[in-house]
Amino acid sequence: MTPSATPSSVAPSARIQSIDALRGLVMLLMLVDHAREFFFIHAQVSDPMDVTATSPALFFTRLVAHLCAPIFIALTGLSAWLYASKKGGAPAASAFLFKRGLFLIALELTLVSFAWTFSLTPTTVFLQVIWVIGLSMIALAALVHLPRGLLIALGLVIVLGHNLLDPITIAEGAPGHAVWAVLHDRGYIDLPWGGQARTSYPLLPWIGVIALGYGIGPWFAAEGATRRRRLVMLGLAMLGLFVVLRTLNVYGDQPWTTQPDLLHTMMSVLNLTKYPPSADFLLTTLGVGALLLAGLERTPKRLVALLAVFGGAPLFFYLIHLYGLHLLNLAALAMVGPNQGEVFSLPNVGWIWLLALATAVPCGFACRWFAGVKRRSSHWWMKYL
Image 1 (tube, rainbow, N blue to C red):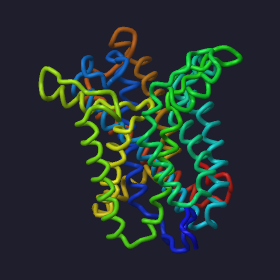
Image 2 (image 1 turned 135 degrees about the horizontal axis):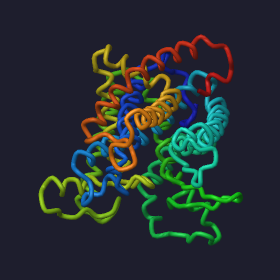
Image 3 (image 1 turned 90 degrees about the vertical axis):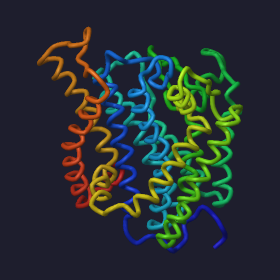
């Protein structure tokens, strides 16, 4: 077989639990961030990473949540390789990726959008992470046919080089604005029936991330110690490159600035751009992700199994936690009334973490139940959930 993105005939014979565990871990961090969105409303700022307007507790709570989208999308690419290795190679993966991508886009515009707004006619439709995962999967459906070396090279060029496009902006109403807003420049798109769509997650960098996830797939057909060594080397290399770029402070993200004290200076260094994700943002989060994945392969099995409960049914978890948090906030507002201006909101960031922990428990039981239902089901459409 010529070197290509097509999986080899040697593939893992069983589900790799550390992948589900890492997916579960970052989704729990996402739960904390979404608890902040619903229950820290009185303290909302335009950017929770703004060093000058955000407390350190809120800043670092938001910072750890940054791990979720990059790691999840990279694992989506990796999972696509594992699927292809078991189902007939790149053609099978391509067909599945295309159909599931369309399904996720439709889900973002319906159930996910409604979970955030509880409105059937929102004035703004936010095109967020599920939407961009769907688009990335559709892009990967085409890229899996490339030779593996070319696929990885393309992913690296996109991840490391897309910031060169930052000076390009297209004004609203100008030709090409909608396309550029979808690809790289976070913005608003006028809809034909009125209202607007907000491209919260511009697509282009995420194509690079999902391609790199698919590209490292063959490592997971190798012996465990070899795979862990490669993951550690990859993680350290990415973090090392981040340190070099951030020290030079001329490319990879907006420059950091010296603040009145060491803590806030460090916050400025770590205040990385997520929309769209900068090269520094992706190097940091994916580097940490590679180290976490290697570490989880050596973590006690009981903890890995617990995290894998959430990561084994990620889409189900995503939906139930959004609806649960929104309904819980409305119930609190109805029972005790507003306690912060016109809203019900928790007093500090510590309470946000406690709420997330409390919410995770019933979600975990629900995910375990759903995983069993999905495993036993013979319906073809269940594999898309």
